[in-house]
Image (cartoon, rainbow, N blue to C red; front, side, top):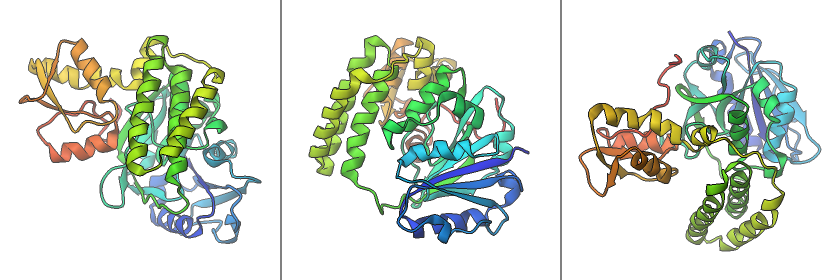
Amino acid sequence: MPAISFVIPTHNRKEVLSQTMDMMGRYRLSQLGGKDSEVIILDNASDTPVSEYVPTRLANGLEVQVHRLNENISASARNFGVDNARCQWIVMLDDDSSPVRGNINSVLDAMPIEVGAVGGEILLSDGAHEAGGLPEVIVGCGCAIRRSAFIEAGGYDSDFGYYAEEYDLCAKLIANGHRIVHSRAMVFEHRKVVEGRDFGDILFRLVRNNAWVAARYATGDVRDQMIESLFARYEQIAQIERVSDSFVSGKAEAIATLAYQPSRVLSPDHWKRFTGQQAVIDGVLVELQRRQVHQVQLIERGKGDDVIVRALESSGIEVLDSSTTQVIGTLSLGPMLDAIMRHRDALMAWEPMASAEVL
């Protein structure tokens, strides 16, 4: 039974974190790695120290450590948590997320050594799924990372603050030879509390940080195109959300700093995995070839729909406006699972693991 260190950064969200601790304390300890598991809270210089209200042990016996930092270093506080962790697996949570279903211990115990990270199924409070991530990119509020792989990769880059830091980490994990998988047998709830969130700041970081990821890891022939495409997408989002000034600022900072990003261009095979193209090739393309299908319709388009189209068309599959064979047009696990519930006869672009067993 692998013991697990649950790592949670927080800043000025006393009620939110207290609720998370209460929910964690209700979970069966044997499913969380047993008596040697632990919760490590990184207090990002909150006005009221977390140690004043969080117990040292939860109701189920899970030990709690609190480390108070001198300043708010956002998501990179997780690095400090991993440094102080005693367990081989780290489960990353936000202060408003927690496991709600499944045996995390069994899932992680089944993972071969080449698996460096495992993404979970993440539900929102309304029953829909969390957006974000790719077949080999985890979402930070509900995932597990092998401690040795995390340290080898250098952890989270503090320059990112938050948003897209998981993409940067996963690119490094892939480059170092690790696999990243998703398991629906490990289920988390993200209550996604809006307290303390500024969408203007979020948009700024999404623009800048995603451009940094492209600059660091994209192959030369797609780098500039990828950056221009993400600028166009976030400009539309900024207009809808009425935060255009934040988009302009984020784009300006991205452009000013792209040349200074550390370059670690992924190999063609690693790039296919990082973007999700390889998951499409190994997933829906195999099924379409088995069925001898040559024309499909892409529905419910979202993140990575362009990658799906390229993978299909490069294999001789036509993507039409209408077809009897429909493929869910997103690589993001959560929206893909939501879409398949609405279109049960459609095909998913890739298949997450359905149980704790590894294929």
